[in-house]
Image (cartoon, rainbow, N blue to C red):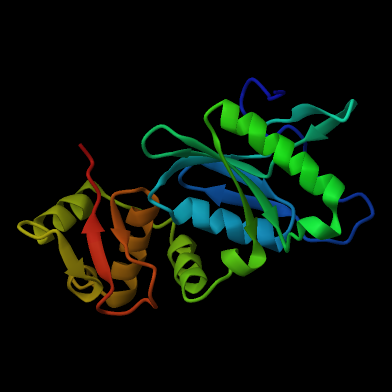
Length: 217
């Protein structure tokens, strides 16, 4: 496995003469900007940024050198995530993946999956349909948009007091302890990215959305 000592991406962003969107996404979870090379990759980063099961993540984290049918092949995944519980997950992001349409590439992915399995890592392919599935994507996109909102120790104490004696509270009850509804949602969103609490994003966001504090001890 080839990777940089500082765990930075193994290749830099470049479009050459291609006219496709590229950019950098500032991750609060990582404390640094991470690169993306398509809107689909960017939207996948939103999920990693918001998910309470993801501690941190890296893009283009390493390159595998695989020998397939006697031929050396290189494979660089799109993302690697450190998960709660100590496990790591390697992620390949695709607009759409049909193994039958490109059996050679599908075989390379299967070899990569086998290598990761031997090293104890999970491997998955995320397609656009999954990444942008509703209502989850709208909720994730909204939460990550407030990731840079400042959080103070007073804010954390206020939330702890609000949850005293409760495991779960509706969004409205937690949001309304702040000066305004927009500020409250922004603060809670930033806290979710920082893994201080979690909002249930499986349904459309609303006043009754369940909110839970994460164990910080």
